[in-house]
Length: 417
Image (cartoon, one colour):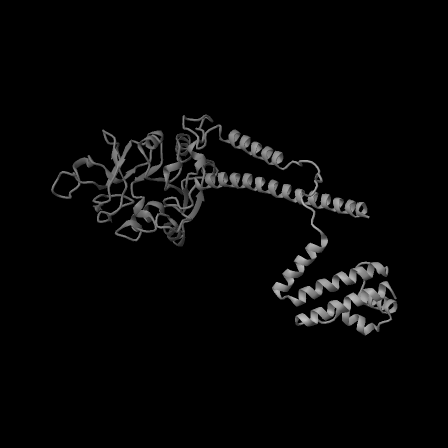
């Protein structure tokens, strides 16, 4: 009898253990794959974040440094504003004499993209450059050099299509100095004073640079406006002093404005001849192979850690506990808890299972067949049998003891009718 009971129990233990181990393996594999996916997602986010959504003078940025306010005012005045974010997009923008091209943030404008910018804009109406450096100006073939500038109040004091004589600006970050000798038909506006002079009068011949330089068109380039007024044209400061007027005259002179915001790809874009110009890429060349290798290693580690370790092995119990001891211990726990309902439910469930097996009632059968079979076998009315097996739970110790006696008596009557 003992052997017959042990074998199904061992099989059940093996099946339960196998299912538990399978679930553990799935959870581990899922966790490892989740870590790999999270790492790859982090790399993607880092790459995307390199192209900041709040770049200075970005026409779609509502932040203090963005240029959305200026772009919307230009649209309200009937200027068609097209935004491109790569040098390839600029080259495909169908540029002509009725177009102004505006570069508001040259941080990502690499040498190759700068060279292609000069070729793409040779026949347009006007090119407006804000904050460009000397290297970029040289690649564009413009006789202008760039130097750092400090915020200060400057008056235009020039005759220009962009600035009026009395215009005032208060925010600049770059000053521009014309090459010597100064090219013909070049105008410097908002000329800086001599920093050692007692007055704020502009320095003669703009020897300390100017906040804005305007170059007349030539065979090499269109009309060009080079300005160090990036902060002045931002959302936060465009309404101060004469900032808005200067910006609108610089960018709104043509019916169409192509607002070029160089993307991170333009840092390493090839030049006009299809070759690079010596700029280091944003990510080292070994980044992709290393990420792929790490991903494969993590997947292999997950598979190795999640492998099956073999079937469960039955081991002898270190101590043999008699059934009566566990029953008495459980009874003491129920008594200490005072849970009469739970104790009664356990007693009734055990009695119903034993009676069903004895009377050949299939497992899971309704109460009706069991009550009828027990009533027939014990000669006890069906109502009394139903009350004993399925009645209300007892409310105190005495009722629980009485129920236990009734259940025992009922089993005895079925066993010995």
